[in-house]
Amino acid sequence: MTLVLAIAAGGLIGLSLGALGGGGSILAVPVLVYALGQSPAQATTGSLVVVGVTSLIGAVTAYRSGHVLLARGVAFGTVALGGAVVGAKASTHVPGPVLLACFAVLMLVVAAVMALRLWRRRGGAGDHPRVLDEPIITFSPTFACQCPRALKVLVTATVVGLLTGFLGVGGGFLVVPALLLALALPMEYAVGTSLVVITMTSAMALAVRAGVGVAPDWWLVLALTAASAAAAVLGARLACRVDTRRLQVAFTVLVLVVAVYTAARALPSLV
Image (tube, rainbow, N blue to C red; front, side, top):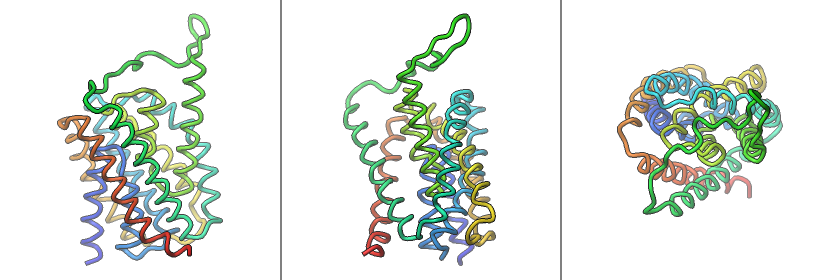
């Protein structure tokens, strides 16, 4: 029964990651803790495997569909790696209940930011790329720098990496808003490009966590990963056929629902 539950949950995680570019990690951690009996430390490590592998497959599918800005994703992910290392090391010194409480609070904040963005854009035109081909820093023929935007990307990517390593999340529910706000990408490009960033930061955070703390039940993690990876391909194809505004609404609702549930379970344990 546990294995069946892991496969079913993996399917939902993969659909979320493939279609929305996020949500997988915020589903993986609660599923591993509350449904599959893993400790918070085990869950945050196992989720990195699930989300990292699934994101890689989803990124390849999205790239073939033309919805990945590879150079921007790699650049953003490279900056985020430093934060991921620091966050992963810091997480080993924090009690499980505190990790889950921080996880819930972060999701509530992200849901609020995304809801506010949707509210401000209600009734307006859809997202269109404004700066897709406009580099932030150039060296030829002369050096030029859009320094305010460069600073915004630097700070945003570092924070994303830090939280990814600390909470053991893939960062999709952080990376998508970051790419929307820092790089002004339209939703369909932010979703695909975020998968590149998630793959990079998850791999780095997992490498730092290797051999530290209690290992998760790898059979459950592998079952979750296999089901998630298969569903991610379907999710990425679905993203190409669904209105981007609906994707934003679904993304926001998903984060909010899981945040409320996790908060209800985690916060009382701190009292």
